Image 1 (cartoon, rainbow, N blue to C red):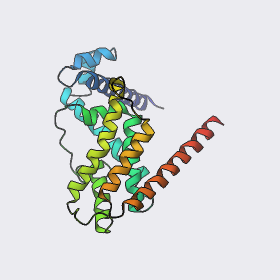
Image 2 (image 1 turned 90 degrees about the vertical axis):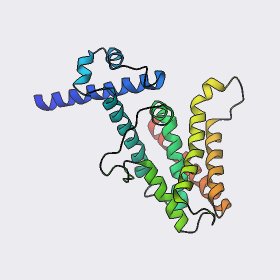
Image 3 (image 1 turned 135 degrees about the vertical axis):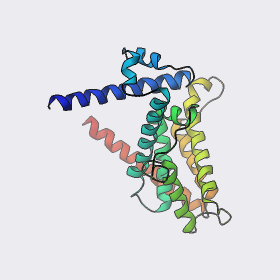
Image 4 (image 1 turned 45 degrees about the vertical axis):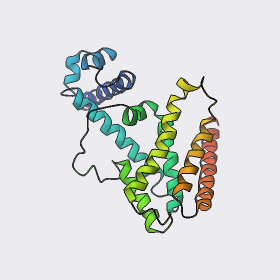
Length: 236
């Protein structure tokens, strides 16, 4: 590796370090309370170093959100797009959503549970399912609707997609506040809560609720089997 390549790699590593520190602080303290100086202090750099990468805090936050939402959308494309029929893809999309919140809680809190300044889409970004997860889910709902698989009174694609999103987001958000609330109620295991949430959401929109439920159970079982196989391979 030559000097220019090494410098570029080091520059990118510092950029990602800045974004990681910013994410942690924004989730913990909120957008208004966090300063560029504080972010710089967290990674033991000067504020001047940050301004070489980002013109101001808004630019930093916009890039942070763009990266996290792109990673979120890519998870749908890679794990859902080519799998099974549309009912199975709906089940897998719900699992991907909840899995992202479980695996990347800081990113999820920042994306969906932290008040941030608007991040307008770049050219082509708004309608690209590889960069906008909502468009991916909307397309899936549209396919289910056109295939006659949803209740006949459900005719507004965006309303259905956003209601499905609200139900799954509720399960994800609740999971992230469990540590603060566990003294007040007996929470069921995460696996049970997530499975029940997906089952109730899918049944609520399905023309044939039992079929949607069967597909979901089968998908959950297959996912667990795949996880078990991966774990055994990793321990081999």
